[in-house]
Length: 293
Image 1 (tube, rainbow, N blue to C red):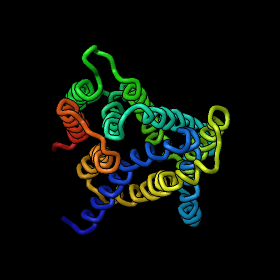
Image 2 (tube, one colour):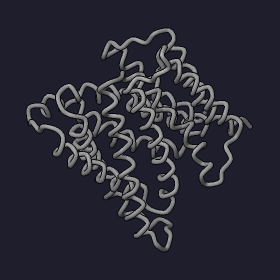
Image 3 (cartoon, rainbow, N blue to C red):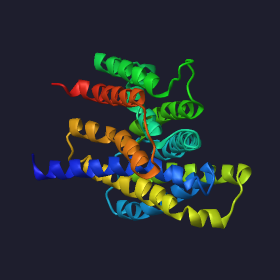
């Protein structure tokens, strides 16, 4: 393996670890502040962490853009920020009712949903996508559905958030070739931060003591999870092999379960572990099927 490819793989592994352990930070942070306060502050910090990249990007030649790039950026980026707000809000509230490990695995289903949602644009998912979806669905049943065929409230919220994450990924895929990616990220994070803080002001009680107590998890979620991990992903995927990237990014769910076990003393039953294994297999199979040649 070339050194550049190995370095990219290590960076992607670090990105997956940061995002996986972020589920732990999200749960710990809500011991002191509400879910919307946590999200508002962490995405505001994430915006600040992108400022150096914004300034560096201003010095580069203009990217190829569509004739209506400014209008596309304004309205497309606004829609992206709104979808991101809904996705992170559902996920954050769900963590009040479910474990970090389960939330990580269910959120990871977006890698299966994305190609299926491509049907809306006339795309036909390959056989591997459908096989991965079936494996992930069975795994989700084992992980989250109880004996009376009902899904736990928190798990249901995470599942809905995964649907919105899928929409967010598709919007990014459409917009990023047409506008500056870092500016798009800054714009969507800003909208998400603003909407989260406005919602927090309406439904949550603000206290500086709670924010100080949650400073560590908030800094992790804002600076590391949003700022550093985003930068690592952008840098790594310039050199990473697609197959490696698919495998390594899917490990986010594994790191979420590992973090929940090590830090929060979360335990999964044998049935839930089998479900997690099937879900991870479905995610990987869906992504790697097209690369089999």
